Length: 239
Image (cartoon, rainbow, N blue to C red; front, side, top):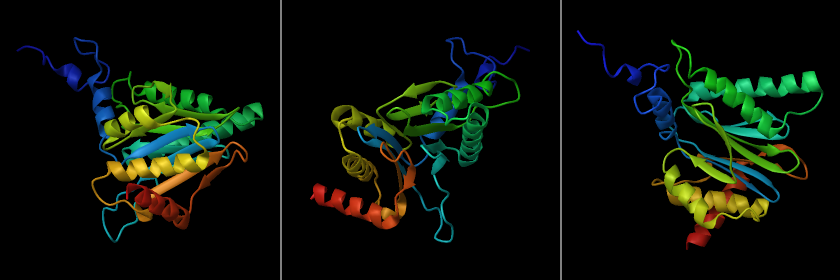
């Protein structure tokens, strides 16, 4: 006889009595179930790291780090399908900017456009928010790192982690991360933190790493043998 008092729990367009959009919060919870993803900027560039999980020995896990433009890379942390949609959207925004303005898109502008696109899915009935946080790193005048929220906000970070055990990793960043790190030191630090945060063994087969250097301004993915070198260094420092 009475209306369902928890209707705001299922409807994206209805605020709860305390001013929350619960579907957005549920989408944020989905990002915490994904394997760990890390982004950080240092004096020499940007480092993106993602942990891959093998669901079956017969299947190759999907990639998590993507090239958006020559000078920008991104990690989609959350639902894989949602992430693919947003990565393609980011690539289109980058190409539109080159076509219309004749220059590369800035990292901040890309983050803003993706955030605005995500926000549209929080205010219309029949839609749902993207269950993904996008870590966007690149070089403009200097290193830049942004994170987009399922609710449509975007934030500028020096270092940030999304996914399983990310609260622990972000606390580690607050205590020991230094933006004065060189790019090499930053990679070592990211690998060490990732290995320490995972309950299962992490090696070069389970890591993706990409960098954007301030000198070359080019997105580059590290090869498996390069990643293995950093994994061995991290193991040595643990000993």
